[in-house]
Image (cartoon, rainbow, N blue to C red):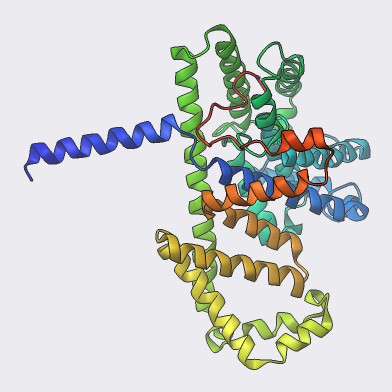
Length: 410
């Protein structure tokens, strides 16, 4: 092959790759299942901890506001809960986190809800950062990545509204939300709350990021109405596709890093090397919701040995075998089964749900479409006939137009 031919092939491959990542929304179904999984995880956790919310994150927490401010000053984490010591502010933020999680779950105004979800996840978790565990860390990271994705293109109320064309004209709800969020941002900047909540840190500025989100949404909606299909709208749409695809790649890489680090750290431990690591958590009262089941599993030395070694092998090999579709699917089944078992046997449902939601980024699109259609048919069978006829419509393709394009805060 001549040098000119090699240069031409490289140029063509680069052009094709660029047009793919800027012209298409890749992994729309994977983004939707990640959105649903993490909204369900965080919202479910907040509901379960409702009786203990003030002790964990509120005014009764052993980790006082002064201690929280000192730690935030050193690690530069972001939270709105230190804006006020009053109980009503904490209760409002906690309740808002539950409501936003529910709205993100069903996909209502997902562009806005994903951003608010990120703010509220960071706010609640960073208030008492020592309370969290590995599952909370995963939710923490994925909440940030989701804000850059178009996670409402399928399996959402936004997608349903786009199919019906209910937001193509004047959208007073979207405009009101957009103006309200702009007013809140302006108030935070002018009042000094941005500095207090670690929103403005000098070397990097969350406030600037939020303003860019706000301006991007408004300009895109304005262009979609004034000049549909114009060059300006196409440019912003390409930028949105690029951000979405980059965020989905980061989510996939993050999952690989999680399993790689977990697996390699396990290899260094003597209990994992000896094949007995699983025995000990099965005999801890803290991880013992079903004593009979834990005793049955922990009393079988062969099962303990196989599960211990199998866990290490699956976690270490996953980042290297993820590019083989068939092997990847087998590993996904093993990992999801493992996390489901952890939820039941060790009593860690939200950690397991967070990891399953993260694993879902690698699920095949064909499987997700088939599963979604099955769920839709199952739900439609229990609905009145008019709803039944509407519910069994074909779900939109991942390449269809962004359903949030005509609303500034879709």
